[in-house]
Amino acid sequence: MFEQYSNENLPNLKEMVAKNYDNVNPDEEPAVHGVGVLTSGGDAPGMNATIRAVVRAGTKAGFKMMGVTRGYHGLWKGEIKELGHRDVSETLQRGGTFLMTARSKSWETPEGVLKGAKNCEVFGIDCMIVIGGDGSYRGARDLARLGIPVIGIPGTIDNDIASTDYTIGYDTAMNTAMEAIDKLRDTASSHERCSVIEVMGRHAGYIALNVGIATGAELILLPEVPWDIKDVIRTILDGRNRGKRHYIVIVAEGAGNATDIAKQIEEATEIESRPTILGHLQRGGSPSLRDRTMASLMGIHAIECIQQKKLNRLIVYKHGEISDVDIEEGLSMSKNINMDDVERSKLLS
Ligand code: F6P
Image (cartoon, rainbow, N blue to C red; front, side, top):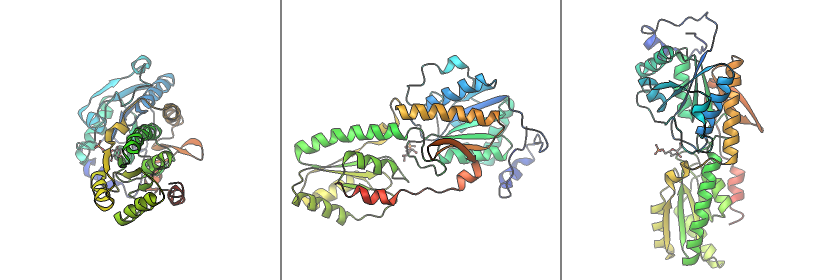
């Protein structure tokens, strides 16, 4: 086992468990033979395609590929098995993650992380590929701090990972939401109603903003931008005065509650209003072309990093290219919604 990572702020977790973990040898050269892969946090369309890519590129590069089920929880429990080329057949087009995923409680204590790291040793995993969002990356960093090198691949429908412009699953989720909203517009139009649609995004409004632009929403409510119900009502009334007969309001889940907003609109305007929460529908489905391609190329890039001994990296899509950044650097970055696009979105409604 090797100590590949060092950071002055890190040792806490390590110190707490060091007495139980005596195999770390800072002088040992990284030598990767076994590569683990897990999916963690909320699933996203394209995770299967990512697993397929890392398993196929990894076995071709001569690594022994090990699949961990149920994310960090499975790592903690030792639910790990070898994956070969044929084990990932017929997965490219499937939604979800066949390795399954979890938001793991077992990873919340240093002892839990230590057990996971020890299981890496037991199962011969010299490097772990983690497919997930920022929370999953923080879990990966915990492993890195214990000497298990990691590679992160961005997989979340929210597109809210700061280090990358694109996350696997985002395109499919937006297309799913767009198709659903087009259908809701049909019925809103027939009944001259206001349709208030809640899309996913607890902390980030990327889905809401882009889907709102793509579906011609009157209003797009985002967690990043303060809003007032009075302005929402005024915009709808202005629309009615201009001859509009139906209305689409998109609200990101982190910005408000569709049911409350619809009720307030109906009470203030007497326009019949109906809430729809798209919810987990947005997380399912066969990945789009963009997600399959991103998943495949990012998965290959992850294996290339390991071959080049570039460890503790996050795979990113920046300036139109797939590349990688140091995990600490990536986790310290911040990402903001494009406020110009927020303003532009108001011009077309
Ligand atoms: O992180 C992806 C996401 O789909 C968010 O948009 C949403 O807030 C959250 O996961 C929902 O999580 P869960 O499936 O645990 O309810």
